[in-house]
Length: 100
Ligand code: HEC
Image (cartoon, rainbow, N blue to C red; front, side, top):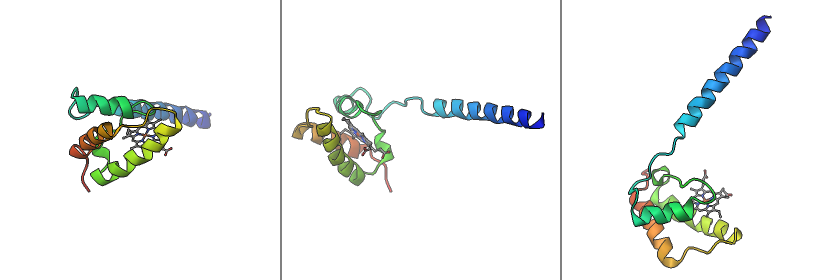
């Protein structure tokens, strides 16, 4: 009987942790919310996964990441980022990037 009680407690603790995790992921507004750059970023970079907050990577890492994503975009058959789109997105990410 004791074991059943423990299992039930573990399930309840798991449910609480899950609920907290979900609440922790509530979408936070991106920087420069509503600007042309933010809308382009969220539109182009939020189709396959949520648009990551620029704070989560450094400027140098964004540079590499956007190049890696060009490949994903091509593989998915989406239109590649134009030079102007890439400049706007990189500029937006770098202005708001995190620091080491
Ligand atoms: C066509 C779908 C697609 C689009 C559009 C896309 N991504 Fe991705 N992205 C992926 C996939 C798939 C992964 C998972 C990692 C992998 O497979 O390399 C990923 C991973 C990432 C990661 C790494 C997350 C991690 O935890 O390591 C970042 C950051 C990222 N993408 C940023 C961007 C940015 C910035 C753009 C816009 C330029 C973008 N993505 C557009 C498909 C996409």
